[in-house]
Picture 1: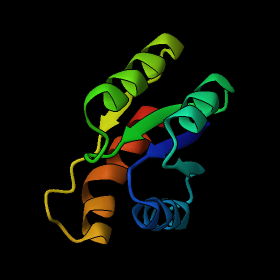
Picture 2: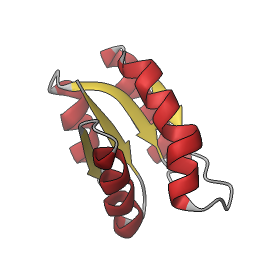
Picture 3: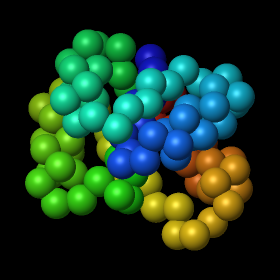
Picture 4: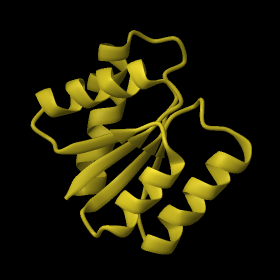
Length: 100
């Protein structure tokens, strides 16, 4: 199963995809809620990371789509941390736990 990351900024998505792939996990990244929902419906996604920049109706839509597919959601919250540090110490352990 793959992880899915949805975030507002293309550069952030690209960096996170690279960091997660370096760790040996499969991931698909997008800035599009429509594309994210399509990926969730594909049956290939095992966990969803929603970036902190996805707010309001957009976040609600993504969370509802993940819920309909029975997918666990990780609420991305970098809190100003270095991106690599955040990925290694927070995001990757959560992804591994959710993806089994």
